Image 1 (cartoon, rainbow, N blue to C red):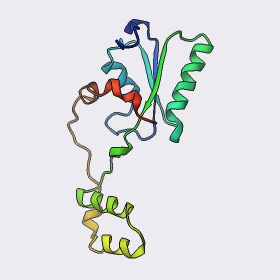
Image 2 (cartoon, rainbow, N blue to C red):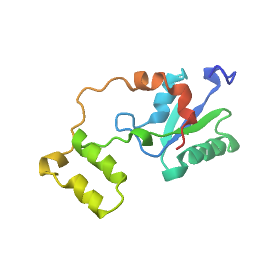
Image 3 (cartoon, one colour):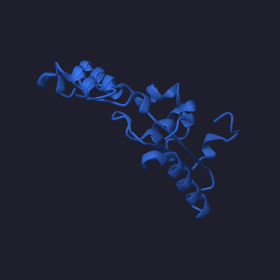
Length: 148
């Protein structure tokens, strides 16, 4: 916010695009809003529109301004595709990552030859989740640089 010269109180809405939402942070726009120091009263919502999520967020912001619903709207996008939440055991996740690099059917058979039903069980979500604001706080200024 300090680079824009805007006072946090001037911002009326924050809209962020995100292709794959992190399960513990389903409304990334709200997390970014709070981490950036915007007032809790600022409307913040996340859009998900395949590979054009950030563009959709920007279009929504433009619409809000054009229709006179807001004067100042922040829009952008983020992604977590570098760390997609795969809810399988570590061993199975490693196999899936290796399979992504496989060159042919023979490679797949080699990767998955020792797979047993227990390795396919999904991991349960943690019962205690840390504050999303703490997770996003350090990266809030860099969130807009991701592609959504």
